[in-house]
Amino acid sequence: MSAQPKKIIILGGGSAGWMAASLIQKAWADKGTEILLIESDVINKIGVGEGSTPALRLFFNYLGIKEAEWMPACNATYKCGISFPGWTSKDDPAYADFSAYIHPFYSQADWKTGNAFMHNARLRRDGIDVPAHPDDYWLQSYLAKNFKSPIAAQQLRDEMDYGYHFDSALVGNFLKKRLLSMGVKHLVDTVDDVTLNNSGEIASLITKANGEQNADIFIDCTGFAARLISKALNVDFVDYSDSLFNDRAVAIQSSIDCTQDIPSQTTSTALSSGWAWNIPLSNRYGNGYVYSSKYITDEEAEKELRAHIGKSCEGYEARVIPMRLGRLTHHWHKNVLAVGLSQGFIEPLEATALMLIQHTVELFISHYEEMFTEQRDTAGQQNIFNSQLNEVFESIKDYIVAHYRLNSRTDSQYWCDNRDNTNNSPRLNALLNAWHTKGGDFEAELTRHNAELTYFAPSWYCLFAGKGHFPTTVTKPEQHIKVAPTAEIINYCQHVSQQFSVHNEQLAKVYGDKWPKSK
Image (spheres, rainbow, N blue to C red):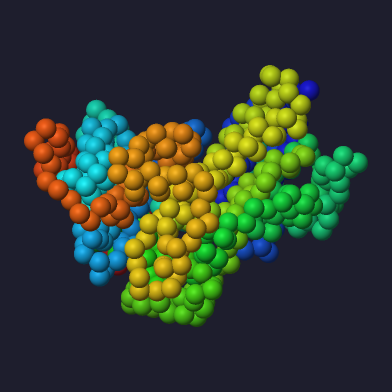
């Protein structure tokens, strides 16, 4: 037996299917693995996510695809981070200075200023009156607020990390066209039946037009339907609805003028019964409202979202998208790997969907190869894989849940119920207690509970500090207490940010002749 499968069938296209095919083709095609992707032309792609973490940059770099090649094809723009306005109380003076904050994609350029932020935040947690708003300390927040790209006009000592905004359907189409030109096999067909062998593994897919299709490994990219992993293999699902209330989204496009400043941030604004995303692309804005149907109807949500967007969405249709939040107990079971929405979904608040697709496939490739090099049985290797991947899901879930637990709004039952909900994991409870305990060692709790698996300490600090979770009674720092020089840091960040290109000017360089003309 070899350390890679002879044949893999990927069921389902979209960003999940074609990203999986891209990574497997890169890793195993030259070693003899045959890849067949089967997708239906009658199933609508969900396409909720139009933002990414910096992991997507690594994905394209790994495939050897330059930004000038894929970004114009996918209407992509740059992303420095995510802004969170409206998550705190407008009426409580304690949150007056924390009406919004930016969760940045920090890098080596932020090392010193980031440490200064966390130092001052520790002092503020202990009731010492020092500046501790994250936006003052992170270079990416200055870039985002000034419509700058994360690309410096001249080479800097420390490279910036960043994400992207894009049309997810076009990303799938781009990868599809590329892979078909490289010889990956493709069928447009629907699956009528799934046959199992005596071991309970999938033996074949029976397609409507092309008959029986066999493989060693089947990858389920069929979205929430989970045609193979759930319907054929009956793998259990862990529901997150007791801690994450949102179960719907309504999406609406709106117009953009590329001659004006283009934001380089995702904006996630708290509304009455959830939050609204605003994502700038080169041809439009993507907008959506993620909400709970227990607190607002689809019609009310659309009306509230349209009022939030304004006239620029007039004439654009709204699309309601049901969401199932949670994860599988086993992502790799028998001879099936679930990827994308079929394996689970954590709402798009931190744009982790594509990162989880990428991480799942990369982890599967390494574990499959390791199974042979370490001579482990399949079940044992799958247990290790599933345990690691489930921990990633749980870590992301805790970070997302914390956004809701830390809100301070009192203007709707939705926000009050989210704040009062006690269905937290032991890890999140420990972090909440450590932060709000004077002298509590927050970093020690992060380490003890492996909370930095997906979000490092600076992200957790931005989350708690950005939502203004500090004592209301403060005292001036005594002379022996060292305070990070916030004014100097602000001047430094403002100076360095001037060395970065204006966002739409940088995009014009990347797009070349494909850059949209003035309207």
